[in-house]
Length: 101
Image (cartoon, rainbow, N blue to C red; front, side, top):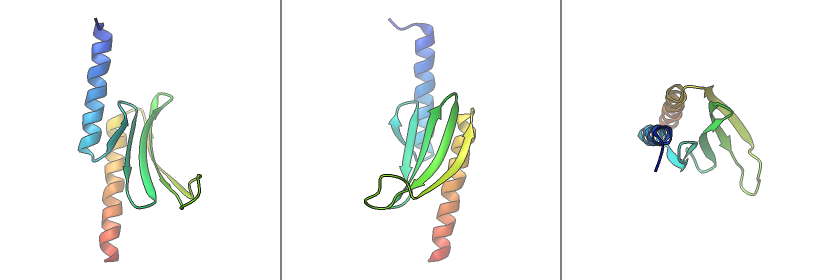
């Protein structure tokens, strides 16, 4: 039987996962890693590392393991802040794409 602490942690994980989905992210590792492809070669990641949430974008070239471009979007303890920054980044990309057409 689960302890109260385990139940609380599970509820927090489920809440984070649901928030990530609302922002358009895909749950890669429940409660820890979220991702979304923003183009053919670029991916945004949100990951919990060393007590903080990191969000960044990597761009890869075909046939290369290492990213050719990296951009830090946000780093904070508050996941809501990080999700908001990621959402702002998505909005920025969308406006930029519309401007090119």
